[in-house]
Length: 71
Image 1 (cartoon, rainbow, N blue to C red):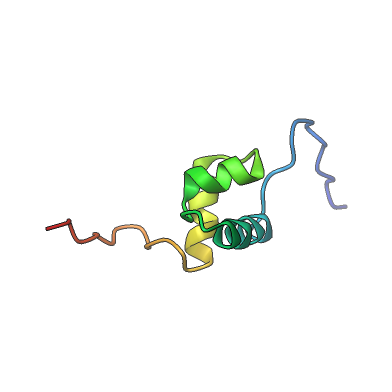
Image 2 (image 1 turned 60 degrees about the vertical axis):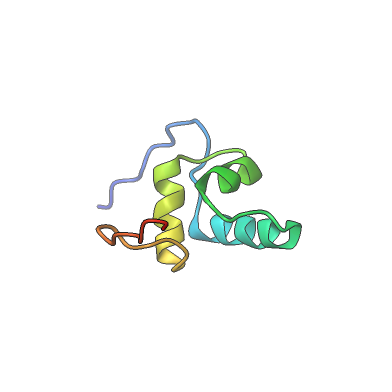
């Protein structure tokens, strides 16, 4: 028999679709797409979850990828 997950209360987690919609809204507003602005747009979600969703969408560098330092 499958074990049912208990509802633990609290707020529902964010999804990749939530992050995608927030990115579209930010783009329309001419704002920078990044974890801070996405969290402000959504009003919830951890930065870790947001960055994971951005990586899934191909909008953030993969882990371990070094960015070029500015000149």
